[in-house]
Image (cartoon, rainbow, N blue to C red; front, side, top):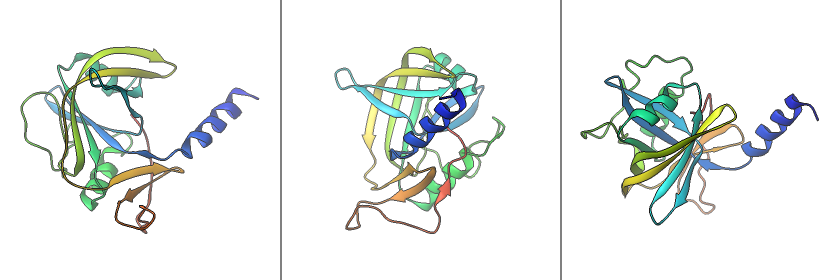
Length: 184
């Protein structure tokens, strides 16, 4: 199997694994840096820790190593969350103005959190290690809360769809399914 075939097969295999979509938010140079993530994992309950994976050459990798704190917003199933995800997934978007048209939770510090959320985490980087073309970041959880909103944005088979616990199967299909343009 060639390297290209392996990478294509790997991507196709993992695309079949449904995962919730989150947005990493951090203040960088006085601006809100917002990055869509599909790889957020619980690493430890005691103490509470998570891991994320971001492109090694991205603005996010540098910001996560330098910021005192950063945030993860687990998106809810609302139209506002879908619109925010579409905005932060635009390729080549500049750092300045990434949060235009997105409702943010007012708070002090470097962590940036979106309003359209089912959960918020405020984190501090514990360590970061290179992994191929990505950086794996482990973080201590400083704050964690469920917002009381239900649902999520879920990535599966190369598309993002809102998911709500209200249906008989738990899933709600809409005509607004969107392709994912990028990750971390």
